Image (cartoon, rainbow, N blue to C red; front, side):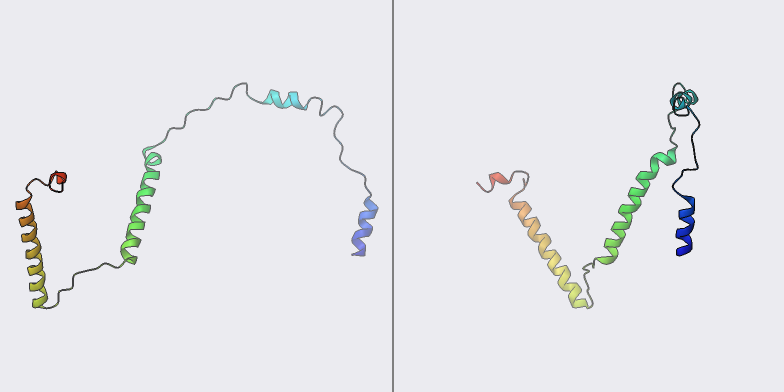
Length: 118
């Protein structure tokens, strides 16, 4: 540690770098002379892939979310294991169907509910 401090003390606080005389006087003019007079930008031509890429990425994102929800969320399925359960299901389904048909025969015009409930 002592060796480094001795070397720094030998150098001193003098700056070995100097700028040429009048360098900053002409700096602005020399930079402006190197720049073009007018900047012309050509419009970027987008290919079909460049235009469709965001839409495809978004579709893939929604597909991935739907797939994750399908995998993660449990589905309730109808488990009919015996023939009596199947017969009970069909009986319930038939009762619901006849009930709906009866309701439709009583109220043939379902489009206007206000007439029936006034």
